[in-house]
Image (cartoon, rainbow over all chains, first blue to last red; front, side, top):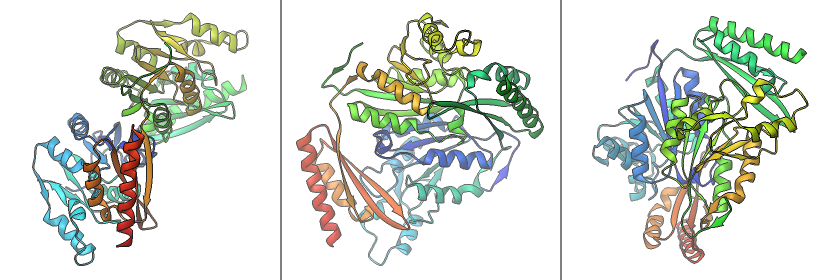
Length: 248
Length: 248
């Protein structure tokens, strides 16, 4: 698969696998990382699901998202321990076999000292039939891609390395551009104006994000569009509305 | 609704609503907050979905989760602006009407100065028929509960205040207790032992969480159970296994 850009919108779903996120023990960082990565290259992240280390739940989430989006990404559950069940779940989701993969074995044998390929490490070479490997420049044990699903590690540094490895292979669409405009006002003071601006500019998306700091409310208005001229026109109207509300 | 504790396991799903999380502009903090809150009071968070500001997608996620879990929580989309569509989506998910709610109007009228109840602010009083209000001690505009679904604000400080408001109303189950054991080893070095310990202790859940820092790998093993004796026995075995692997 080689990289290409298209005028069509390219979409993605993300399945985060891990009891530790759902229990609160680990605070997820991968969602923000993937969201930034995809936005930057012109792929719209449309949905995220966080599921526990239960095979049925992983299968269900992956099979719900893969027909719906151009790409699906997963993080977590591909290490050497008994609770790493993602590779098996993905094989089941695709209805294919899974076995020790000679390419993955070769990578790990070259990495570990002689005799270092323990059963536990070998478990990380189990790859579903028909999958392509995703390089892991950090700790070598590879991820894999099968169909439109990219299976990556949950450790943030490794997931980031895997994203860099697959970046050249992804088809990307027209990038969604954005302008952020700050208003030192609670959003209720500009809500009516924003509604009118949104109606007048159907080609843009206007989001209003309230913030509270030390009991004081402010708002960030984010205007997004794939077309720069449409974006600039709407952003100007928002700026004017913020200035008018601030002065009143 | 009054609080109660049960011996049965109490479960929850969480729907995070907001384009800003999916675009990467805002890094979510509410998932970690809710996960910690629920774990602390003995409710298992079993699934999270992040969906965009699109009514159909909110309806779909809420209707998928509410028959599946004891409780559903949502965050985001209940402010005064045009992109705040959660209340309407929830009404549609339940097939009920939605209108300005006299209780919510009374709260906001008491809070704002005379004449301060603008159309935008009044929009925040739209509540689905049959819902109970959730108090917002930060900025007053209430959340609401309908059926087993709790609809809360996306601003972290407000969501936290709403969680405190509903805490006494939630039925809770036996709390999942945990012990975290640190191993200064890559997880492949203890994987075989952990698998055996997991097999020998079916009443506990053993999770293995690799970490990488400055190119060095370590592992945190987390043992979880509702029963303290089972927890302690498994944790002791894990400790012994870590010590043996470290010495070898």
